[in-house]
Image 1 (cartoon, rainbow, N blue to C red):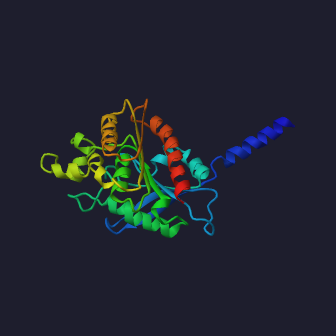
Image 2: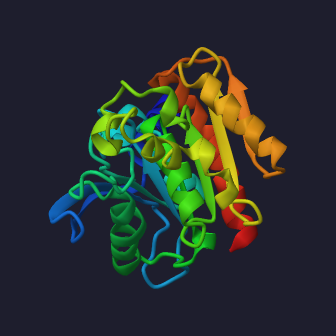
Length: 272
């Protein structure tokens, strides 16, 4: 009898371990004149008629897409239930760097993420429609993008994070097709300077934006993350900074997202 009960319990648990709902939301971008796919994870507790839910925007890295997080870290379905949050994973193109390109008007991912996507998410789902109910983070290119977008739009996002983010583009003029978004570094140095997160800290001085970022000590972005941390210390900008053993890989990000979500859950609970 005990064995039968245990078997039934195991089956029940496996069926309900991830009770959240995963969907794909297609949003037409007026600014880029194309339809863009976004993964949406809805917690099991979601009810359109009851309390509004906070939204966590989670960005992918270079060469990735909107399916990366859900396929590489399926545990995020459980996290949506644990923290009662809606998780949105947008498609940010393989190498958009989540900016409105100053040289290519067909690449307007800052406009898409901050205006078009947020607007559609708030229209379709029962969300908290203020910055107190929105947070954004991401890995690598997405880590740069999350800080970049939140630094420029603290009225939209109340908290922001980065995992292994490429937070100083100037140090990598020949990598990841950044030049296709900003122009050749020698020809357009201001584009690179003005669109690097490390040079944008003045935008968050005096704001209430909550910030967390981390990087593995064996990551090729480790030095630029430490540079950002030291600059924020110099200017007395409150933030959480973590460095731990790890490389630029999914093993690191699968671990990192667990800690970042504790940070964002605390933000939501204290501000809502």
